[in-house]
Image (tube, rainbow, N blue to C red):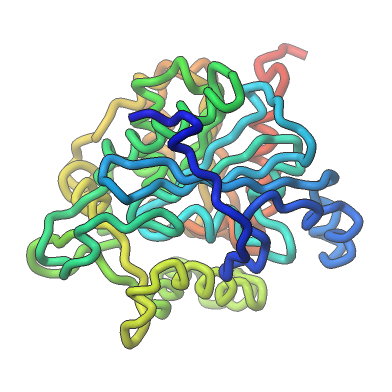
Amino acid sequence: MSDGPSQTRPRQGRTRPETGLPRRQMFGAVAAAGLAAALPPSAATAAPSTRLQTEEFRLPWSEPGIDIYVRNKHPAGTDRFAGDRILLFVHGSTYPASTAFDLPLGGMSAMDYFAGQGFDVYLVDLPGYGQSGRPAPMSAPAADNPPFMRTPDAAKVVGQVVDFILKRRNVDKIDLMGWSWGTSTMGLYTSTHNDRVNRLVLYAPQWLARTPALMAGGSGPLGAYRSVSRDSAKARWLTGVPEDKQADLIPPGWFDQWADATFATDPVGARQSPPVLRAPNGTVADKDAYWAAGKPLYDPGDIRVPVLLIHAEWDADLPSYQAQEYFTTLTHAPYKRFIELGEGTHTVMMEKNRMQFLHAVAAFLTEADPQALN
């Protein structure tokens, strides 16, 4: 499948309702002075120091008429980046990248942060998620079709986006970052494409499960997709958090900001009562067939690039033991690191300790000589 300019379609200028920011060629929204004035002192010190430019692309997918949404942010006026300053992010099982990685919490998104550090940053919403097209099975009752968007399918989409970025920026390799199920997507891709990956960040890595999963497909045969309510999303987010810590884990307004943006990406689900978000069930099928059955979907020992595992202590979706055991399987990484953050959940990137998360990832990606002796 080609990803040349004739098939890569940047979207034209419109306003995206989930963030209120312009869709195309957005400048100046995170200029240091303006952003610092809008943020509390603790956040303002981490604000990007450069003006950012946003571009959006739609790549063709294997199903005619269904496209893959890709967003890019980078320092304005710059179009040449070294491969070790280019980062691609992919989301997890249920929620898209566009409303998590680029959600301007307190005026700054995670994507803004990395772009402000000089990175050329990309995110991708897989087909069936977020701003990407909805494949045909999502136009029928879930029970009418089998699960779709399995992990190998997701890794193939990532490969298409990586190839697009490599060609666009004329580089040989880039950094990759996956969250939750996205760690399996990025891990699988890297295990077979080490030559295209510089460094790999796995945020809340998925591995063999010894405890029941919070994400389930419901009773009966597994259909093409599942539906998630806003209330169930909040309950899942807070699972495992001590009661006396729940009130201040998510800063005021942040959950509603995320939920409003995320559920708005599924207009069909939004028309239901109560409104729901629909998500492909390929990831659930893989969980049942592999991770919950004690069978790895791929071999992390085939990953031969530097790896950071980053996790939070109250993650009930993919508990700490999975990250710890995954770490031991990275037998051929040139170097590897495991960071466990305190007082955070599966969604620590959007919680009170998110700057600890962002600082740790940026430090890993920007180290000039991590194996220096002094």
